[in-house]
Length: 100
Image (cartoon, rainbow, N blue to C red):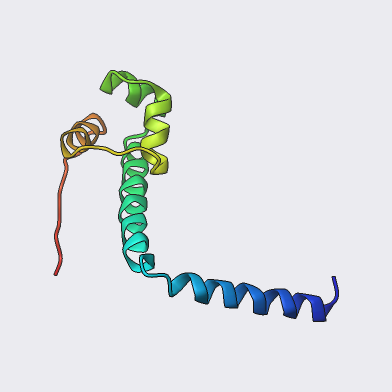
């Protein structure tokens, strides 16, 4: 691909990204995704810090490895009660922080 084509594609990409950011629901969706991603990342970190596999954690929580995988990827909703169980199974505790 030549440089002119690359510049054209880059400009189109930037135009599309700008149009997406201007969509009415963009800010809310971005915030929701960020929250879900951060929770999933913390779940994964907790398990790794505990030094256990998804399969071992699944046994401790009486569920399946695929459920743990979905939780850690952000593809599943999790209740506060389940977050607490997850934390305990990893040898930790749940801490919630609200910032203004």
